[in-house]
Image (cartoon, rainbow, N blue to C red; front, side, top):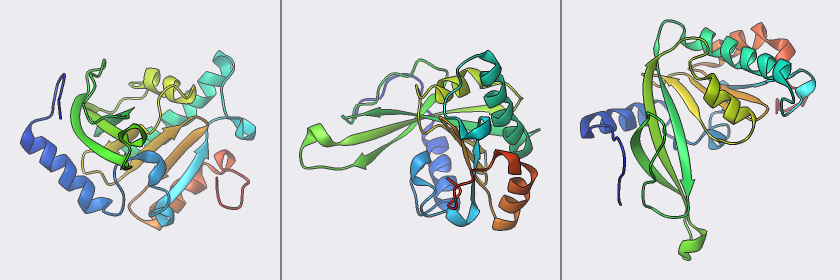
Length: 196
């Protein structure tokens, strides 16, 4: 497998992988796959009133970014975070990443005897102090469905914020902590019985 661009060191790569495996052993670090095995610590918030999916003007972007950042502040204020950004390909070669993120690992997400139908997820990670607004550019890309399966997590990987186009899935250490966060933002919840 070819690697291009910045890479985490071997020891940091092992530490990241071990931290993930210790906390989330039933799922690879792929945002849309987490809800299945971790439903008991999951809550979904919608990013616009009325569960509207996509912002159409700057006032709606301000609402969506405000909701993303409000939850991110509650989860990570005063902490360092990892911003994990995937690049999806049909081949195992690691693509170049235009951001400052460093290559972490590659996952074979969909295996198939025919190489044309295989799907790889190449994970790039950036460690930074959390500050409100520090990833607004990325969050706008997510809101516009230009980027998918971004994960923001504390460095111990105990809490996960997975923004998507239309909202954010949040995974917390316990159902009690999940319930407290959910109850602070009841206006942002879905009316769907499954919370979707």
